[in-house]
Image 1 (cartoon, rainbow, N blue to C red):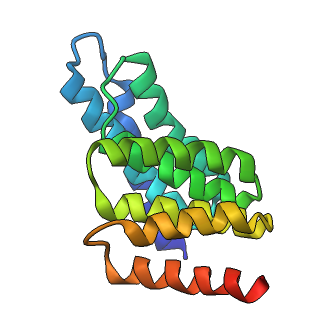
Image 2: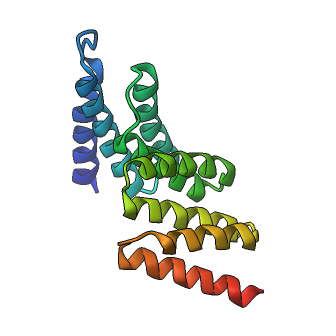
Length: 168
């Protein structure tokens, strides 16, 4: 555990180092790479189950995009999706919906079928947990309508859809 914590601290320092640099000459490409580094830190935090830190790290990506007026892309969409998922784990369903909807919007623009399907799936689950069966069914059906969707996402949407039918 001590070695793991030491490696984690070293990784954290490495990821935080670019934020200490003079960013006045950074181009949008530099800020996008910095945002990807923040996403990696958020991903690491999620492996530890520290969802408050997950939100914090992925929000740094959001802030980089906002402050530097970067074009919304899949790096930002990934951050939004992960924030939404973290909020689900933290029990904040309203915030989860906001971020998952934002991720969905961007993934739709980029035609990223698997992440579109994942967003629909997660939104369907949020509404299912709230017992809004109609809205949940709508999202699961949208997930199943995505062409060339990965099989695991199709299966989850189908299983969850069947649970709705069992409730009605």
